[in-house]
Length: 216
Image (cartoon, rainbow, N blue to C red; front, side):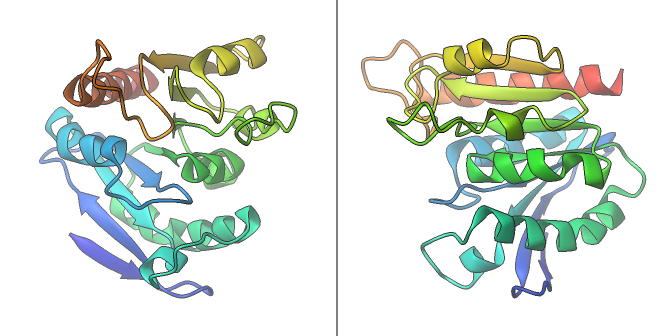
């Protein structure tokens, strides 16, 4: 199901993958350089509904308009927040987890508390710009007061799983799952022990288990 949602920045778009008997809803945003067809987002939408978890992928207005460059981070938050009422209606009282990949994960972290999210799912969180580890975005990652799951490749130039684990020491609500051989796009080399299918399985299994734990 596809739903266009008006915002002050233009229409955004929700692609809904509904579970037959849902027990939670996961709302995911895309990155600054790609859309909802990213391998991890697509895998979650395809597999989580069978586990009783509905998935809603959100396309920001700039992406729906066909633009190739994302606006400033604060602008991304505006459309996300304005779309929240539509998500609340879709959730229909079910626990809501927010998240996304890369820039979408940043948006989810910055807004999770205000939106009353039960937890946050971060895919390839951009801890810092490539080659600039001193420019840390850790403050955003630790902002949610709820559990945060981070799935991060060990070849991610925006910060590896080890980098995040090290920087987030002391923040008990943050759990990091390393995706061996994966880069920022969750892609692995042909020589990697992990295949693309293995990555999709690891991502979906990790998120599924995380939802189970959040629901108690």
